[in-house]
Image 1: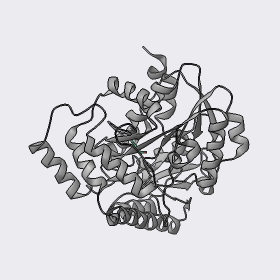
Image 2: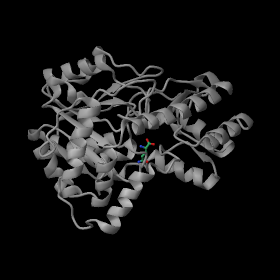
Image 3: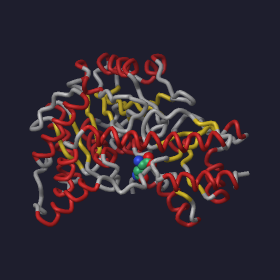
Image 4: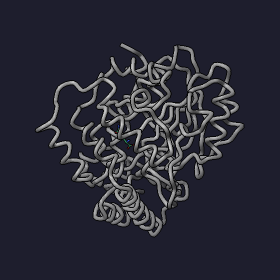
Length: 382
Ligand code: GLN
């Protein structure tokens, strides 16, 4: 058996969701919304199942979805994409990330990663034969420095893989960070794989800037998006990949032998959804922001130290002021004694020794958030 995979534990999301089911806890661990998602988009999918094409769609994705993606990203992010050569549909962003690593990394190449990182990244990098080089980001700001990048990049750097906005930190690499990263990529002739699945889930009036929009990165970026996060339909697993034709040709080779295609009915519904009016996207953000604020203020009232959340479905709590020194143990007690499931952020670090941050998902109905707060109020973990 392959030692990289056989040595892996079950993902922390599955472990915590399982524990939540067993204990009847309020599940604020794994990140998925309570809301069923936009009804018109779901009806479109249902209609396409009943009346549409249910055989293999084109390998690169339905032409109407690739065109809708190009139009959508022109409108929202100012990107000029050729739908015929620069857009591909995958079965979720995770397939896109795995495929991009398979396509771009040759064993022995170095891959720069930012920890805490989404838990799929490191095993996929290793399985592709990449040598991980970490930039460690630390709370409360999880900021990027030139010194840290200079230590991680080398003449062997082939790829830098990052998430923006970032899960689990709920922070965003802004213009200055992206400029710095771009500078390192150009100097080291590296390609950026940018997982931008949270691009629409940004708060307080922010607007997402894609690294693909930077002229110096136009030919060296793989932008990855996900209908799951754009439409709060996390089970759909429809991903979008955008890259210049020279890169896309190789990404397509990986895709053709991983999944080959993605269900055509879901693609048709996503094509429709991407063309929804601005109000839908603004309303979705506003709703999540309201949930964030409701949960954050509830936590603060209970004496928790809440870290800022600029985007994603998550907010983090610093447990050090509670005298806690082990986030894994804290989360175990939180679920068994308080009846609330959360995610220990140390699960996203490979090297850094950060053990004082716990992630909560606030993309829930008020009643769910209030139930969690009530449990925390009455049964604070000891
Ligand atoms: N993206 C989700 C999260 O961060 C988890 C997805 C999964 O369980 N694989 O919570």
